[in-house]
Amino acid sequence: MKRTERLHALTEMLRRNGSRGCSAERLAREFEVSVRTVKRDLAALENSGAPLWSRPGPGGGYGLAIGASLPPVSLSPSQAVALMAAVSAASDAPYADLAAAGIKKILDVLDPRTRARADELAGRVWVNAPPSASRAIRSALEEAMAEQRVLRLRYTSGDGTTTTRDVEPVLFACTNGQWYLVGWCRLRDAMRWFTVSRIERASVTKTACGGHSIQEVGEPPASARPVHERG
Image (cartoon, rainbow, N blue to C red; front, side, top):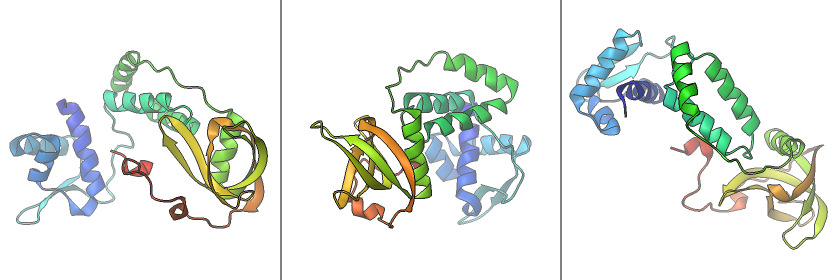
């Protein structure tokens, strides 16, 4: 990891740890550098205006002042391209359009030099995105999930049977490159997995979901976890 990228990552780690802070030894292990290098990096961050605090002695460490004013965006070119690549490669993922719009906002406020380097690097990353469901269907699924309202679906199963059914959305899941809507099917009176690409029509009703929980879906595979726990 280059020093510029390490400084960005170091800042984010301190931010995530909040008032607990981190010892120099822990930071050194995390970034696979010496304690001396970490302390030089922390000094560089402080000299650049980052609101660092330090607490000596056992249980001490370094952190960022709570509530301090920090730049709204602090990304390296590689981090910016990583975001672009992730969204481009998962254009069929839930809320992908909103993610793309959010990334554009981030790019628009990067400093010109970082933006130029990110644009140059982005040209070296190609993505052949898979076909996705129609925008209207995806919008309906996303809205129903966020608002927890019943969906009315026209769905064709793997054996070619087409049905219209009301579904209470519980979660989105991706496995083996395929996206699924998992929800309580009122037609079958059971939890069902619906392949998103087989949904032919979807509309959001005014009926609120009945409160079926994620736990009813069952235990996920050991390799699966919510997106906020990735990385």
